[in-house]
Length: 414
Image (cartoon, rainbow, N blue to C red; front, side, top):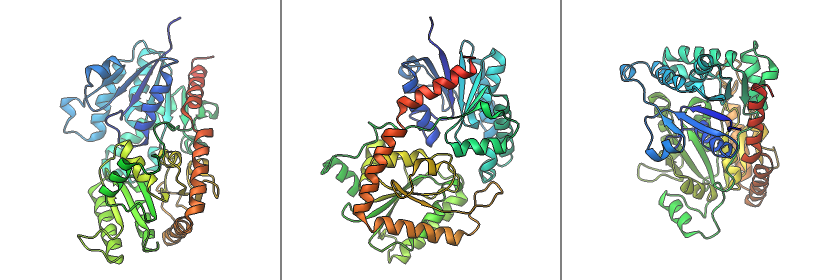
């Protein structure tokens, strides 16, 4: 019997990974390969002969659309992907960038289309700042693909609730929860006294002898970085603030964050030549360097106002860090409040932006939670160890592969 052929469609795939969806697709493709003939189709142009031999095909935006609105360029790639899906048994798309390729390819070739929902366009209205009228196009593409899909995977129960609220026409039986996973071997705390890890940390301006709060994420409205920087003004002066933050959505939000960081440093008595315990790493770090930075920190913070699950929280937990995160979206399904970290309450606007109704209260609560955890290193270490155990018990990729295969069997009729 021939192996099930699964074509995974994604905007991101290594080495071109910008966020959690790209990490998810890379890990999912790896764990599915023992069970299926997996083909990955992604953006960012043709891949090396070695990658192509491994079943990865990259596509460029058509030359005729190179200067068009980015949403139109995306649809140009989707058309090329859709044309290449003949012969697949299941097509599985990730994010709106690839959803239309799965939808059209499914119609064209008679293939069931599965969508994994990593986020929802109607719940990210700030993207209009980035895409202009392209946001209306991306929203249309997502809606069309979701309503036409044979099955939808939500990365958390919170995400499933959002999907059914935003798209009430869907049959709830077609929306399945399969959490994101974590590569437990790749995300592990370096051994104590590891000289290379210490070299990396000190080379970045981090003092491993001082307590530290660390953030990892893109500079986008949903990640809540401006709220964190404001909260950091209330942290004890000895606490370092480590921001692994880049890839801004717009020049405007980058300028806002730069201004807030400059103000934070000034409040701490710093200058242009003295970062005053506020370390900002703008480039995306390789995994070994990022694990070193995480391991040198006391607590991880996720101040997101919109987060379907939050792979970064799993990565931090796997390295043994407690997580202080917003009690929104799928974060409460990852962070066990009081056991593996602390959930920060938030009352949010229902206009799709996720904006805190009382931002000053949210900032104050975030600062208080971080101060409480970072001021008790022994308790923080206990929470971090519990977080590693939780990652091992609930978010291992082997179990997630089987749950995903079960969704494929469902849409195939058995």
